[in-house]
Amino acid sequence: MRRIAIALILVAIIAGMYACSADAPTAPRGGGGGTSSSALTVVLFTSNANPPAGTCTLIEAIVSLNGSPVPDGTSVAFSTDFGSFSQNGLPLVSVVTTGGTAVTALCGPAAGTAHVKGTSTVSGKTGTGTLTINFQPSSSTGPFVASCSPSFGPKEGGTTLTLSGGRFFGSVSTTRVQFTANGITRDAIVSSVSANQIVVQTPAFPELNAPTTPTSISLTLGTNLPTPTVLSLPNCFAFGTAGTGTPTITAILPASGTNEGNTRVTIVGSGFPTTGAQVFFGSVEATVVSVTFNQIVVLSPPAFGAGQGNLNQPVQVTVKNIASGAVSNGVTFTYTPALRLTSVSPSEVPSNGPFPQVTIFGQGFQAPVAVVLAGRPAQIVSVSATEVIVVPTGVLVTDCTDVSGPVSVTNVNSGDSASGLSFLYLVKTFAPALTFSEPASGDVSAGTVTVTLHGVNLSHVTKVTFGGRAAAFSIVDDFTITATVPNDFATPPQCPTGVPAGTETKVEDVDIVVTSQTGCTSTLAKGFTYFLPCTVPPTPTP
Image (cartoon, rainbow, N blue to C red; front, side, top):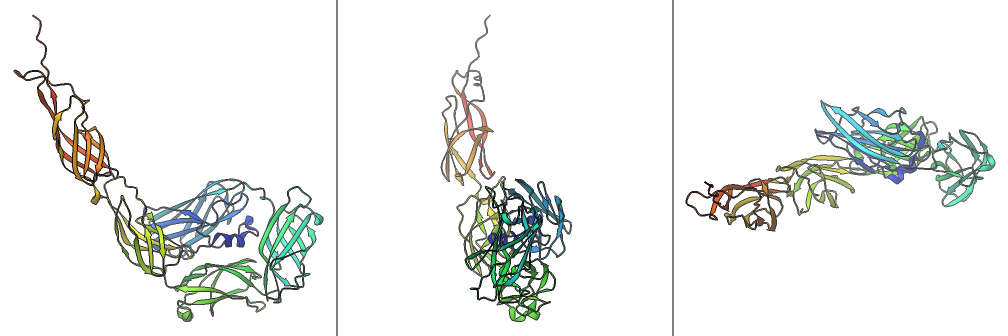
């Protein structure tokens, strides 16, 4: 359940992302969505919701049951109506979870919109999440680089470096490869160019003094064309004084996780051995999930037991090449308490606002966070390790029922989440209530009878009816409404015997009903009596 900052993950995948590795690192929460009508929730996130056509974007499914990660090995079925998944090249793939997270990558062959769905079933409950990815038109959907070999060389240069990939074109004279280290850029000597490989001799950087210096490579194809094709390889090769088998770490994503361990961590760098790589958090070895030339995906070990000294502490993460014995530089990973919720105040707010600030108490909060109150996202005000302050957002209510649900908090960078407590949007409490009308009767023949309705919670009324007939009305305040009694419904009644024409005569007693925007109603039984002038039928002609 780990998310990665978009900029960094693109650094990690830009070299050869078109090929889409099956063991893709966990995606960041660049955009996402998901719903579930049961206790099983599936939420999808992507590293890039608008990737260029011809590339791949990482997709992460976060699956929880009753607010907790589902068991490892839970299957998530991904499907798409555009493009294909990296693992099998098909529009449908099944991936199992680790720590409640399942990761895949969607590759778009051209510009278009992909609607991705992730579905999981646990204990008879099914959850589904959806996500939209828009592959953008791009002119660089051709060549790609999948790997560099070797990934390390001396600063004196002269290392024979092979860039492997596909769709390369041109010749030695129309291909340019540049290395940039510490802001200095130099050209390499291009030895050969084929459809799948480009071989170069690395330039020298004698001014470099660090044991390892990560180097970005720019590959330009077709320098003789009006618009050459340029590929950027930011983590393909490193210079330095260490041996060629020395791994180098440039970033770790995420840089923190819970003491319980099992955080899915992506290590970005160079010189990683594809076989025989060990990763240590402090002195404790982590579980390696996958290794490529510039990425290692691991599951962090717990900070207790063998890693007791790591509890709530920052530790050095290092990579060891078993074959050479070389150990990388260290980067820091911080163990934190598990995210837990203890209370929320206030736990009830009116559904129609204005909304007060709500404080969520607990532990393990790390900005940025995402907060959901009773199924509705909240606006973040502030975050500390033990408190999150938010403002609820509007709730769509279609009937006169209170909206309730759990409080959910997610640490966006690490993906850790907790759900529980209870939050309530009050609807029925603020339902309108009529007490009386004045006048309670009248002659409506002229169509100008105005009635003042009295009650409470009347400021959100959207409809007023007299006997089921809609009336024009105006809201004065929360306690008063004025309404014009509708009169286009009946013909004048006949006068009783002996009663002169034009005498006001009772027509009917009607209920007055008001309806609020939340669907709540209030009825004033027989709240108004209709009168109309009676008429005398004409005397029959003999």
